[in-house]
Length: 284
Ligand code: G4P
Image 1 (cartoon, rainbow, N blue to C red):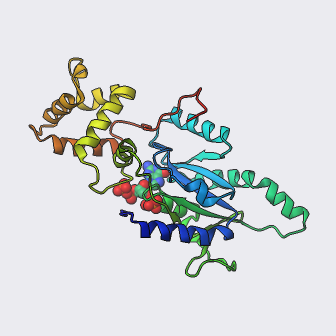
Image 2 (tube, rainbow, N blue to C red; image 1 turned 180 degrees about the vertical axis):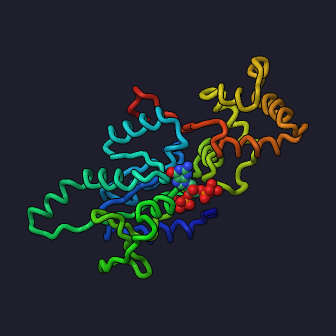
């Protein structure tokens, strides 16, 4: 999905979410495990008000596992239950069902003591484009067993998909706009592929990537582009030119920038997390 956001799009996204919220027990907020802050919608908390809320860190197979563990702890410490998933993995459905039941255990217990019939938990996935909403939905409903529920009150044209006997999902995810706030957030979104339009020049994104990988994953750069120790003391711009030559692209550093970005997106430099959370921090 490649969406240019205009005020009208935002208003529509908000309206749809507001229509759907009363019908769900819980909101699954999807963020990319490589950028758990940059891929968060800036208004999410206000939009979903006090609805029970589970943070799902998607694409955890691409992220730095230590960082992911730190982020999960951080969110939990701030009262937000959180789980990291690889939507390609089979265990994801079970894991999400289990944590969802735990998050809603009080509410479900209250319903039982009131003698209400046991029913599936109803959830909606929300998140910015490309965060993995449809992939997770497909995983959760296991493609073939998708069933139409007859729950009243769902917005016209939408359906409940049965995930397990315990969980149903609204078939239409909430698409939220990303943060447009600052340059660095934009570069993180561009580098991970969350934003694919040309808003960010690829050489700027490549220089950001070089600076970042030099700080946190230098060896991955050395291995991938056969860098020498002399290369490592160069400025980011000069290093980009060295890599351009090593890639056989003469002085076409824009083409080399695109390649570097693609390599990083395709995990050729290994797993990485751009939004850092160190273990001992619990503030932002
Ligand atoms: P959306 O509905 O939120 O817009 O996202 P969607 O599910 O379409 O996922 C966007 C891309 O992210 C897809 O790649 C999808 O395969 C990938 N993806 C989703 N979840 C995971 C995950 O847990 N792990 C990994 N490794 N990838 C995941 P794509 O179709 O190839 O598009 P792209 O790579 O060109 O963006």
